[in-house]
Length: 552
Image (tube, rainbow, N blue to C red; front, side, top):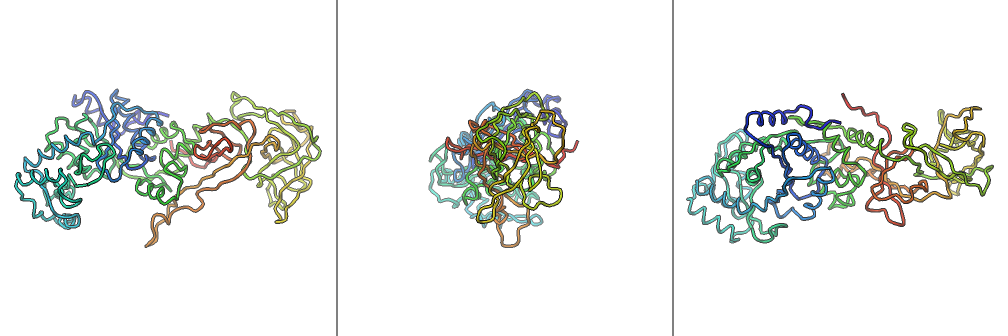
């Protein structure tokens, strides 16, 4: 699959023009997450775009943590973000923290005050909102807007020293309360927060707002193209205002693109954190989560995620991608990589009554019917086997071609077996199926005497290894919330099914993150959280087939 940047898109065209005109000699992009949660698949799109855009033009990409809000940020998130970016296959040029620039930002704020472009305001949050106006009505000026430069300098210094409570005062840019762009109506650029910071500790009790900090960070680092999502389009005039009024030497250009939306998928870190805090999931890396950590634990590969991000492209308008598209790319990747094997998820035992009791036969079974180069494996076969519960029915419907009384099927890679009778437990559940086999029908023997319509998989009962299988459905249902209902009402109660079954003994030593294609069931990954020396736990990454097609 081609890189995202090898096909034309409007961002790439801007970069080409800027290089051609001599405006920039080198392209510098950045990926600037706030460390207030784990990265999700939407961030992956931004990572791939920024890193591959810079790579194509032999530029560089920085990783920067926008850590200007100490209340929500944590070192755990910093470490997880670094791991995710590396796992996706990218290496940053420079590693930066917004908090390392706090002194510089403070000095730039002082510059704005001295220029008469910022003032300390005593209005509380609700009052500031009331003064802001609407899309059709201008805002009202704060009664504190006319404070003198000297008074503002003194108050801002006292804010820095911690003399005021949280919310008691803020520093606002002095721009235009009648601007048609509400973001330009004297936005807050500093607030008080008496909270310990993961990087600077208790050195600061005033913190810059994102809209003030971000352009300064970009300028300090020499970022040429500051790529962000569409919700920041209305903030671009403020971005440029900060760059110019703070007299930054470097002049980055902000460019907006459409964020990624996927069906049945939450793209809000706040909501994802709620799922973790409410124990709906077992952590940020729960395989049902759209976080990169969750996708990794479920069994997605970085190649599949990169190819998905490249395929969806870069657009100027928001749209929603079918979640099956991501599944398409993991199937495409694992079809070439994942060894084939057999696993029985809901086992019932079959006994081949005419097979010798002490005999164990080693059968050669193809690892891939589509790719002979993947070779064959030896699988033990004996009198007692496990098959899937759904592969036997006492009273089958029409066109059911698996085992039922009197019917004959092929055991994959083995023999024809015919159901003679079965045993039920006290509850009426079938627990054992008795069959006979035809020794002339061994797979690969060239037998042509008769044909059967059904082929079912199995594992040898003597050598089978117990395993847990965890099957997933979308965690969130795309339904309109009724009035009064919350986001948590959209949780799919059937998002996880845990089954106890068996696998072939030849994969008993599977390691965490090993991936396999289980015949008929799909692609599975060895789980990193629940697997131990005592038990193997497999996450189903995706089923084998889908009707989804990629549009050419």
